[in-house]
Image (cartoon, rainbow, N blue to C red; front, top):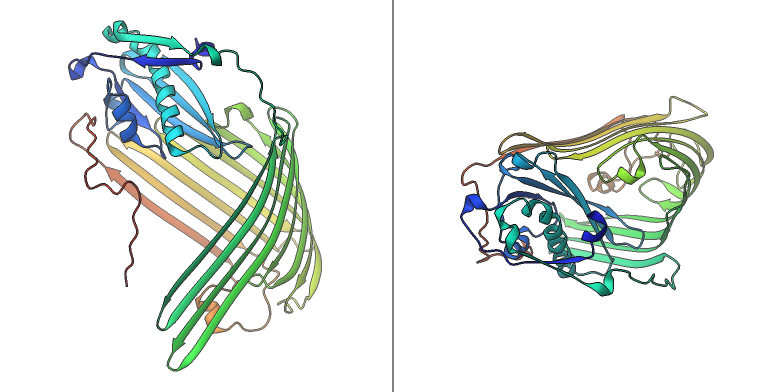
Amino acid sequence: MKNYLSYFLICCSILLGNEHEKLSIFLECRSCNQDYVKENISYVNYVRDRHDADIHILETTQNTGSGGKEYTLIFIGQSEFIGKNDTLMFTTKVDDSDDIIRKERVRIIQIGLVPFLLKTPLASQIAISINKAKVQPKKAEDKWNNWVYSVSGNSFINAQQSSQSLMIYGKIKASRVTENWKLNFSISESLNEDKFDYGGEEYLSTSERISMYGSLIKSLTNHLSAGIWTSAWRSSYSNTDLGLSITPKLEYNIFPYSESNQHALRLIYSIGAEQVDYTDTTLYFKTKESLLSEGLSVSFSTVKPWGSINTSLSGNHYFHDVSKNIFSLNAMLSLRIIKGLSLNIIGSGSMVHNQLSIPKGDYSIEDILLNRAELETQFTYFASVGFSYSFGALYNNIVNPRFSSGGYSYSISY
């Protein structure tokens, strides 16, 4: 059934009955417009909590090589449909509009609901038509040979009588992704400038960074990949006139890569070489140096009906002095504890002993307060804990757009 469902255009004309006669679904998609789905698929009940649903629809996304996205919709049967599961996918192009994406999402959801609707009295109300022109599509020729190019830029200015902030950023990127190869190249530049007038004195702080990156990744098996990363950079923040690096990496995924939109357990080993010319003499009395380093990381991610987990542990050290190292832990947990209650935890921390570029001189107070220069530290951390709890009416089918901003708002406050 899966082989032909993706070619079907489902036209469901269902006579709406009582609430208990409808299927109840819990739709979980972080970036979709659920109101649009409710308006176009009105023959089911939408519930606030997955425990009340006959079907839990879980959407995950991955970026594609062309700059678009691959959407995976997992249909998980509950209640009388326990054990009846399905997975459908669709892909979008980088220039697809939000309207195109939401219409395709609705189409795929309707396709996925058909096997469940066939087990209900509503089956007699389903009509199916096939778009024969798309059953055996011709393979499209790609004159770009899978290469995708992008140019982006951004500027920001914020000012009042006694202060002014300016930010300029630009980036050029080229990438090519196939089943066996993954190539990425980019060049970017950013400039930040802040001016303050206080007590008759003018204070100025600036920072600039120019960087070039390239990576080449080869698929070896359904669990193993190898790649090489190169970079060149100039950064006032990191006291670097010119930095060059090359880093080969090897990655092993315990789970097949074909399942990475649901779960992944990756082990990555890297060994790198750097050549750095510093702007000012460092704390270790260096104006330039050549470095060799080694790194190892393990990361785990999973998306389940009860929530999601993303976590990683990594370490890196220099060969000339293993005490010059860094260890980092990152974690994100989204957990549905009980009906209506969700817990979200985000945290990261690092033990830092590898700051070789710190200059031995003093920074200006402007650069320190505005975070325009890297300061010496032995640790960094970040944490966020939040929860939400909802209760009340079981069904949530009504769409009322009055006085809605449409997702866009802008305000200025002083």
